[in-house]
Length: 243
Image (cartoon, rainbow, N blue to C red):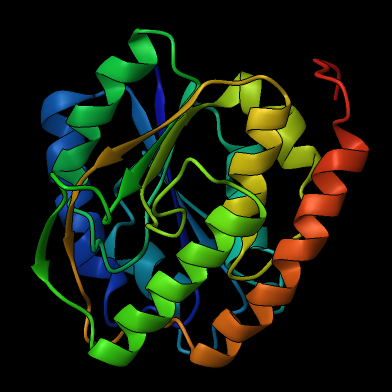
């Protein structure tokens, strides 16, 4: 089984290099058949060039660029669509959830799950460094809206650490339209509507003090929730397995 690690990156030159060092070290030891795809989402700080220069001898690394800043959701989809692995892990560039947490998730895929999402909101979740109160409050409010409007059974859709089997998720990736903050919600909702098995598990999480998430982007995502609910009902009224 080949693993693909997809990392969306927008102006991440200060964080991406140590993140990649940790990922390479873990994957070399535990999952030698792997690749890492850094998807440069229109960075202007030299993220792509610095990554390629630092890891020029790493055959597992692929740096993808498409020009322009399209959003995290677009970057994740682009990476997953171009991945060569049977299983795809999406991870944030700051590695707020340590790469070692993948070991909790892989057995669940082997037991029949199609997608495993990391959660900061379950009783067993381990938050080693919290967000500022205003960010944490905004996140909890957004998750409450997600549960009320789209996904009542999930406590935290926005943790950037998700593992999924690529082939079953391809129809979902092709139908997704949200490029911004709410793309996780759309991904999970479409997967469930397709009849795929999605499970939420607790993970370790460490807030990055230089988080790229902006409150304005989060506010814009609230409106997307209504659109996602309508789109899921319209596009996936009956479970289907064709793209």
